[in-house]
Length: 223
Image (cartoon, rainbow, N blue to C red):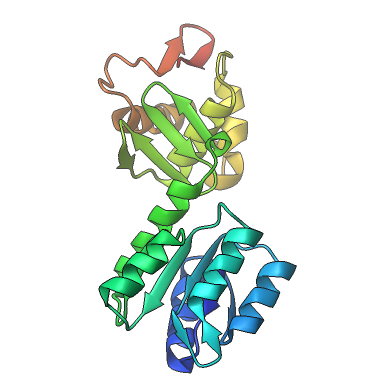
């Protein structure tokens, strides 16, 4: 994920860049309105974090440029200004969120991910029943509530959802998770992975309705 940071306080830029990189983002920063508008015209970003008051320019102008360059990209305003006018103006311009400084790092990251989820095109979401997997953000939800999966569980579910309405053999599943597991996956181990995954995505894991067993053959995803 690529983030654009437009901020003229060096300390904040450094701290914010370190935080975003620790979450897997590639960060590009600039401290001027002109620099931000040029970057938006030349590159594509997944999210923009803008300070409203810049030494050279305005975050509102940058927001307008962002809306023109990438209408679906979420914009979050970061500013020390907490007056009602600035908040309303930013949101009216199409900003996804508005966070006053100083902000709490974990809250900021949570709100960034929330903004990204809301902006993700539906074609990047795989579904079966009330389970949804967002390929872009790597999140899984059941009935609207986020489900936390291990890397192996996520990879298994992704494989299932990418092969709906097909019989999936145990050998198919071994191939799908081989690289992650780093070793041969036995039948017993696969049974454990399937049991844990079903406990998280099925309403009743003892009577699965999504990850269904096809006796003698393997499994099948039912939507």
